[in-house]
Length: 378
Image (cartoon, rainbow, N blue to C red; front, side, top):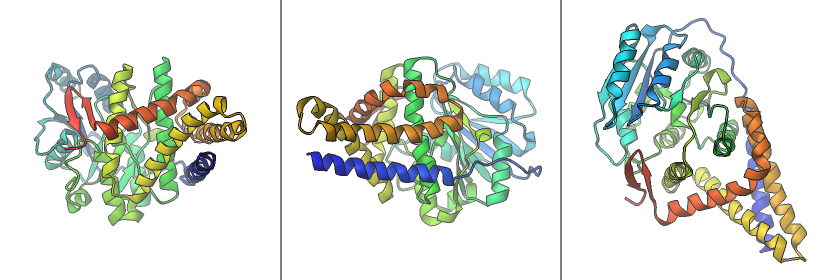
């Protein structure tokens, strides 16, 4: 048991160490072009988001980009709230902005993928840009993307996502959890082996999406519009997939409340892991899962096995330190450093949460999202 624990934690430490190096290899990008030549179709699926739509639309109205060079495509996924009144008010106050509301055309087990494909079918611009209805976008979002496109000629751009300044303990917990994910995401791009991205800030060329037959092949999985598209793009065009590491392109999303909502969200995220086609994605997922098991067992063994106490203490300490390094990098980038003060406590709670989420996803495969029930075993 001791040797296995040490072996797993050493592999994990090396892996996260590689991601830390990769994080710094992705240089921060600063927009330096006055040529605003690219046009964007912003696709936003929504379902009962009457509380979130106003702040999203307000942030879009503040974009510093020519209005004729972007359009908003709101895809209604069977909402039952009074979203029309919000959109009507926005249209009346911002008639210069192109905004269309479309009903989702359900064709698969994935409402999100169907909504994006519905939007793409009605889009008129070259670049598809997706975000979520509970997000707030920065005013230099399109300007930064445009400059990045002109400089790098990409096919897919993964952008950064964060939470606003945290208020509650649950907010800080999610901030640290997301920071770990974003840090490893950027690190993966830095080592030329991208395996994660976030659909709340994802941009790709429409013609390449169509060339790859969109989400064909993974429509049976309810979630994963972002990662499966990344896998497809990276498999065919590895030199055309980039990460946009820029604070000016940072999209803020909402934390989940209450804890049960967070748990359901993370089960949804974990449910797509078994469908990954990238071996590296599967390797990382398995190693993270095993490391969290070893961490919990090590804490128990510290109090049980007096002779091996020092070994298990070192195992737990290695994970705590290496995780903090990559989390701190991301918090520093997103300017949310204050959440790091909660790390000493969350470092012990987070492995329990991760293990619980993974087991629920593997055993039942069921979760609820947006008042719907899904299963990854369908």
